[in-house]
Length: 535
Image: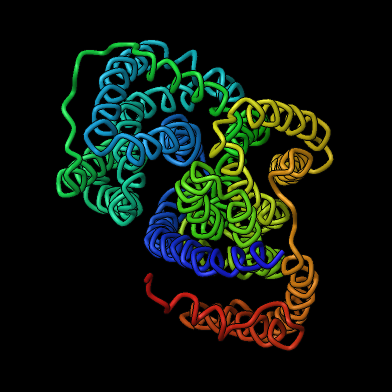
């Protein structure tokens, strides 16, 4: 027993070092992701003012959906989940040269198959649009525009999937900044295209599509330079299905559904929305964009930083440390995502009014998108929990279980979409996605718990209900304040951004104070944790 206690004391500094490492990495990714999301808001504000929620907007958002789906699946999901543990293991066991050679093998196969897939997409684009937006077929002009814009944007798939490989290599050697900063170029490219190319092309949809393609070139270029600076510049060999590549592909295939269930659910939403009244696709897009700010900043940051750390801990036989890491990831994810969800539910109308309520985006668009935002926000903590729980399986090389859960999640989402389609209209796809994400998170947790890979510790047990109380207090303050601040929108004019900032500041201050009072978290402890340097 004394030896065991001594070992725990020896392990504690190492556990704190691992925790600080994860937090610093997540903070790096989160800050860059926050910058990207803020620029994304600026981009969407301009798009909403120029296009509103009309047919051109619907066509462009569908054209963006296909390559963007692959970006999220590969950049934030299946490829990263399958590649990083293998790459990190080779790096630790056999050295940098062998890990680099594995990355080059992967690159050779990816270049060949992505080029082939891109060519197929360009040829069969009308069939693809009929599949993901069947309702567009009833309006020939809208369908034709969606096909043309999609053919412009589709090569982005090739570029961004190669960028995903570069990002995974950089994450594997713990260089997170460039990979996290690359999406900033996406938003800058679209903003520039909208402002400068629109007068030269038939409409803003064409300009934005060209901007998507240009952003892929810029992102890949940035990441190639970052790899060279990290000493991981890759050559492109002839494609060969070596044993390691076959093992990687076996992991990727099920992971496409396991890690990307949320993204596949959003595709189901588009299919259903295309069958509804014109503009529904756009309404759902704008609402989803708002929820992507906390999801990207918190969920993606946690998932990106968590996977390499869990992989190292499990390879070193540190199961206890891995359990502690998962608990802290869940705690910090819940700590940040719950107030974000509650705030967006309570303040949905002011948020949509301030962000998008101008130009072609009229009062009715604001009302409808605010309702969709409420429905999407219900599932926000579950979205983040999935990003924290899935690495617990991926780090163990298990992509089959998340695949099965992902398939079940897509099925749940489809059934709920059909059930909600008529009574809830535009809110139906959003609420179905949220409830399906809750199912996904619960299923992942149950499997991890039954396998003994995740045991909720006393700290999380104690803090979780107190975090809920703090969020309730914040909700009450925001509910009362918004009626005073946004009592007469017609008289606000240039002050609406100030009032929204005031509302956000009030919510943050109330949540921080209530969290301290109820004991949900300790701000001083969190700040000290972030300030400590790795020893």
